[in-house]
Amino acid sequence: MSNRRPLVAGNWKLNGSRAANTALISALRAGLPAQSRTDVVVCPPYVYLAEVSAAIHDSVIQLGAQNVAAEDSGAFTGEVAAGMLRDVGCGFVIIGHSERRACYGETDDLTAAKVAAALRCGLRPILCVGETLAERDAGDTLNVVRRQLEAVLAVTGAEAFSAGLVAYEPVWAIGTGRTATPMQAQEVHAEIRATLARRDATIAAAVRVLYGGSVKASNAKDLFAMADIDGGLIGGASLDAAGFLGICKAAAESY
Ligand code: PGA
Image (cartoon, rainbow, N blue to C red; front, side, top):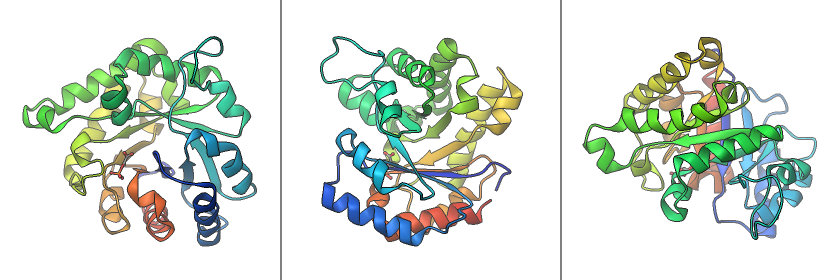
């Protein structure tokens, strides 16, 4: 429970089709209250952004992308720039997801450059941080998360987080069905806020820190009840309208 308005973002990853997206958005539109007490964001694959943008028109649902180029334009085949994402209606972009880091070799430095690119175009970055199981077992969790955060702070300063958000996603909890306990998550969320507070206490107090990793309607309430957990970044459960709506309801009730 906090005085920060919660945010629930659905990270669709490499899933969806025009037909499935239409069905999912219409079920979300029907199930979300007109005056939602939580921000709700969906993040489809790039090719569907424009169509989903039209489908969520005049609803409480907002749009985000799953990745962005570090460059603004030019000879970068296959990339999509922050300005283009704004142009098709995105307000948010997920940056530094552990799948980008692990599968595509994205470094802390590239992640920081992408955050800077998003901010240049008025996109709100959702910066993902989190440790692997080996790092947790080695007692390195807080060091890893601080390092990932500091790499961005060194480039953008704390101001990045007056618009941006942080998502704590322990790698061992993503898509595994194994969720961090509310206490485990809270410990890291508090450290994320403390790391930001060393730069700017006002921004740190206001920034929303999301939890991600096997969040479901059944475990969301206990996670969102923690002092420094301000919503969730939802993968698998965001593809199921009833499940995602249940998570949004839990977030709204935590506020
Ligand atoms: P999950 O994914 O909810 O399927 O664990 C979360 C994420 O990767 O953002």
